[in-house]
Length: 470
Image (cartoon, rainbow, N blue to C red; front, side, top):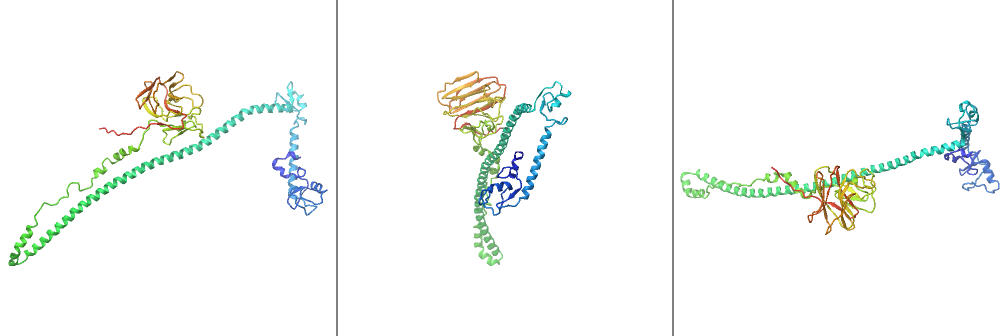
């Protein structure tokens, strides 16, 4: 009986007989058992203990567990209904005989009467158990591709969920770096603003001080003249005798105040606004260029092999011994320690320099956009390859030439003339040409770096200059 019940129904089985409770009774410790099972368990025991927890029972005739009894009776009823339903499914609906055969032509279970009927004349039959086994095996085989596809889809789902996490992390990191760049620019502008305002204030203080000195001297002269004028006007109002008696002194006092030219402020007394405001934004930008760098090639982190680590400004790359957990997006190289530039070229001339090292393998050059990112790359790239202490001009399957380099390279200059089909490599420090590939290019080419070096290879930045044109 117990075999009919699910795992959820095991709680309704007696701990002693392992079957569904029959007349369950409950002990004071709350454990329940079949009444007959419990009495049989206690028959040879002096002390009546719970078979589960060994707690002593105070009653030799425990009460019935009515709730559990009703539940078990319901389960037994459901079990009987299931058995009856199973038996009805095994019986032919036309002849009330057991379905013992399987028609291989109609693909349906039949009884022995159906086998001999006109409906199944000349049909092939198989014992129903054998047919079930064969068709189960066939269905399992047909299910295998679906199961494999389901497994692949689940792996893709895991990858995509990881990609969603990476996208969020990329956005947060990019936002952080943008804010840091703007903070540096804002700090520069703030300091430049403070410096320029300080110069204005210093000019204001200096010219205000000079004006104050002139004004003080002017005030003294005004006061002296005022005193002379008041004294002379007072004597002019006196009588003839008094006026003539003091005339000589008054005349001398007036003559002591010569009529000089009016005092002038002189040139440059005002704030030199044109000096502070003229071409202000240009002058600030021209000064700012000392903190601005320009790289002719920006590396694309979405193409980088998981063993490569980019710098925050995306102009240098190094190899690491431990792979990063990155999405398997279509652009990413999986089998080569390679990263592409973010911009490709399909016309014109382009130049850039790479700072290289001489303690591990690396390669720099250009690569066609269409090269496979997973698996072997057998063609479609042109490079200078540093391997085991030698510099090699390499482009499979046609070119592999060891270069006669006399001193270790510190930089390599790459010059691409796409229209003329020329790709040149040179040493910019000594001005020595290393090798030139002549090739008719038909596809977009991307700069690339391949490295096994734990120290970075770096794209050299260009100096920013200003040229004014009329």
